[in-house]
Image (cartoon, rainbow, N blue to C red):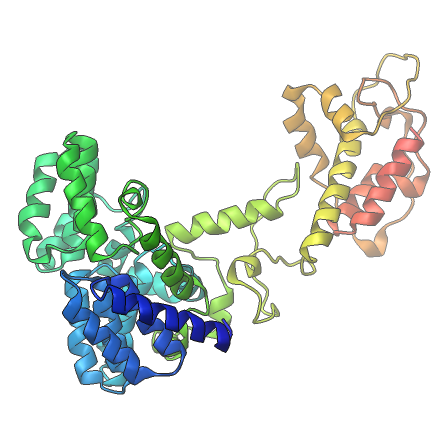
Length: 481
């Protein structure tokens, strides 16, 4: 956003605020624009004005107040406001991130470390927070092994939680005032069909957190989906949108209750919060917090131990680089991976030379697929009955069609397990007549290829990632067949 665009946008939001000072989203947008304009005093004033004009609790307004005090170098006042924000939403990663920054400014390092680890443990759709979790995954995993509370926090929004009701109930008994554990317990009870127990916990056990977005979401889903009380369910989703319309849970049916102008404000504020270089990355001491939990530059590039949500992301990325027909091999990050490489891509490097760039990868994948298809045609078989020789069609679609589906898996495995020959002792190897090959249609091949172009040699090239040479070897084998 250029300075000219920033000024125009700020003028627009100032005018909208004068027209409707009770719109919390407009106030938050105006506050963020003041921060981007390096006007912290105006940002704090804007947030405080919003808190007086907004009719009900608004998490984003409260978070903006805490951020405003922090930027004005008033950590004592900021701490009070951040605690109030956490009382509204104790499961907000952004609240814990701001809280950790304020605690570190006050030199409460142990509390700051725990708050930052809670921020990293709680899942979110926010791109900036997701990137932050990926960079610090080793520290999170180590902390969760030592502190079951953090492991429970990471289960709160998982589609398939790792923890059982009994495990969570034990943690609730050990931490009776923790609202996140109570919400997780209610969520597990709802999943298992214990609707009455879940409602008691949500409506009574979390009564002091009446604006807790996770509580409102669970009440909405329980009444709407499981009890069929759509009218009461809609009351809770409307309340959720009042408290925090930018909450990850306020989607789908929730957003259908909002008008077009409100949705535009939501998209604008999310554009400032979601990017890896978001407004929070600009004004909060994120690097210092990472140092506090022991994250190093090397750690941030290693993704061998991911949390459940991150494993899904890494798996999706791995599928992008999986070559057709090849068996999956475990990948190990190399220490020489450049710092600017993303963690997910760094995890895909092996002991072989670094993977080429994406366009070259696509080209190599296509070449290797052709080589593997040719290798399938040339697989060893018992001595066949002599038949008339037919021309070989190397078109991939024709080869696939001519290969029985039941045999495809076996042929793929056979073609992707190379016979290793050390480079220093590779020499021409003669092939006897008993090692003749078959074409895709079951035709016998002609006498063996030249000694330096055996199947063994072609497979060894493939093993060493010498893709172009391997392809050429496979093609020559096919021509001589």
